[in-house]
Image (tube, rainbow, N blue to C red):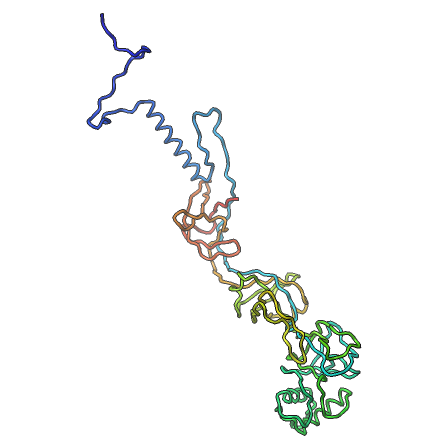
Length: 395
């Protein structure tokens, strides 16, 4: 009886393919194995194609029933622009009058008249009154510290006095030299001034009769004393110059961009602008009001550094008056730059950056770029890119 080789389940045994010495040569992949390999290759290509097109990253699985899932990546596009780009620091500042100074009442007496806030006083004019007599504004850098009279020693305070007498016309025809000597001509000029001010013509000027400031005209910023108060007990007024300036108190991380001489654009509340320049830097912890001309009572210090900007157009500033302004500090700039939003940049694993271009047919392409100036949420780029191109911006 013929014998047939069979498995217990009556499944015929298929002959094994021949093997070489390594045990693998000559093996032919089964049709089922070839089909699975081809399937995996197609899936991989589908995923890569979807990623390259900026579409979904969901692979189609042939063993699932129903239509393949669809999901669109959330993004928009932006046009590559050719424009100017500058790195400007934008800050909020205060438009104020320059150089606030406290004026301390000197000598003995009672305050009998005080100016109003906002009043302006020119050199030679009445600043306030003590015992019914004017305390007069003179220009100068040094406060009055002694009586000015014929028998005093030479000094810079005498020179300041003589300069004012000459400038105000009280020394006309006297041939008065502006020096540190109290001469006979000085005595005559002092008496002329006293007569004009309604003062006794003694030729002597007691301490407290004059207030020296660097400004030929001052503005009353604040009245700190009350009528009837005694002089010599504190600050009477706070005065400023009539020049408006902008002050900023930036953060510590912004100070490096605020060097003296840097240009600035100042925008007023009504939208008008003027130019300015950083002219002064006051470190944190420095004194506040500077004392000059019988002054005192300044602030003890400040917590933040203060940057002062001198304005190019005082007329526009005076039209606005003290207010809050927006200041843009001019930084580095570049013309004719290709610019994209910074959010369009992609950091590459190996270093550097790229953008994703979207072509007219809807396909996308990752293009490596070099980054130049970055400012105002925009970046200058160079590379295989041109103005008018569309770049993908994730949302």
